[in-house]
Length: 391
Ligand code: MG
Image 1 (spheres, rainbow, N blue to C red):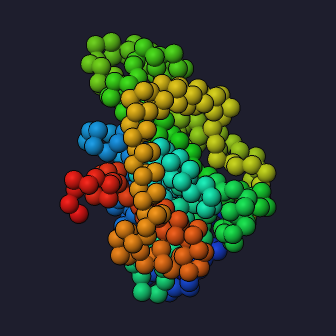
Image 2 (cartoon, rainbow, N blue to C red):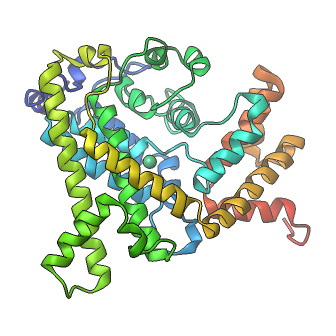
C-alpha cells in the first residue's frame, strides 16, 4: 500500500474496511501507486461500459419519458454521495462505500423492475435472472477491458457489497463471495451502508419524480408522516414559497432527517456492539447500520405508499407491460436462433453452450438483453421483429 493510502486508513474506525485487512483480488496485482485499492475499484467501475449504459436505463420512468427523471446513473451518483457523507461521519471507508454504490445497479436490465421480472420469467428453466447476481457477473466476468483477466478484478469487499442478496442454491456456486449467505454472516459496514443509502436515495427521488410526472399528488403524500411533518414545517416557515421550491425543500429535509437518524442510530449500535474489526462485524447477528425503529416504520409507510400509488399507477403499469413484451420477444427470438445475435454475443453463446448446453445459450441471451439500455432494447426489437425494418 502506498503511504497516502496508509495515512488515510489511520483515521478510520477499527471496524472499517481497510486495504491492510482486505481479502484481496482474485488475480493478484501490484498495488496502485497513488490510489488506495478501493479508489482503484471505483475508477474501474466508472471506466466500465456497463456504468456508462446506466445513463440510458430506467429507474422508474422509461428513459425517453423525459430528461428530468432519474436514470440508473443519476440514482447511483445520489447513492454514492449520500453513502460517502455517512461513511465519513462514521469513520468508515469512504472510497469503498463509493465503489459499492456506483456498482450496485450495474446488472440491471433495461426498463427497471419490469425488465428484471420479465427476464427472470424467461430464464426460469435456466437458473433464473437476478439483477444483484448480474451486477456481480458484470464485474467478475462480462466486462472485457484488461489484458490479464476477464471482468474488473475488484477487491473482495467491493464484490461483497455488490451482492446484497443471494438464494442459498446460488450462494453455493459462488464460492468465497457466497459464503456469508450460507454461514448467515453480515457483510462489512460499508456494504450495509451502501444498501441503506440506496433506499434513502430512491424513496426520496421517486417522490420527486412521481410528483413531477403528476402520478402522485401533494394531497396524497400529506397522508404520509415522513412527508407530512416536513411539509408542514416548510409551509409554516415559508407560506408563500412556490410549489416547486416547496417540494424540493421538503424532500431535502426528508433526506436530511433520514441521514441524521441513520447516523445516530448506527452510532449507538456500533458503540453498544463495539466490534473490534471487520471480521467481528461479519460475525455479528444483525446489521449494525440502520434506522431507528421509528424511522424504519416511517420509511416502510412511504415505501408502501410508493408501491401502491406510483409503481402500480396505471400509466407506469402500461409502460411496464410494453417493456415486458419487448424483453420476452427478444429472448424468444434469440433463444430460437442464436445466429441472430450480434457476432460477439453469438461467440459468447457458443462458448457457454459448449460448457452448459441450452442453459448456456440462454445465459448468453440474458447477458445480451440485460446489458441493453432502454432505447437500445426498443431499437433492437424493431430491427429483429419488425418486417418493415430493413436490417
Ligand atoms: Mg439502487
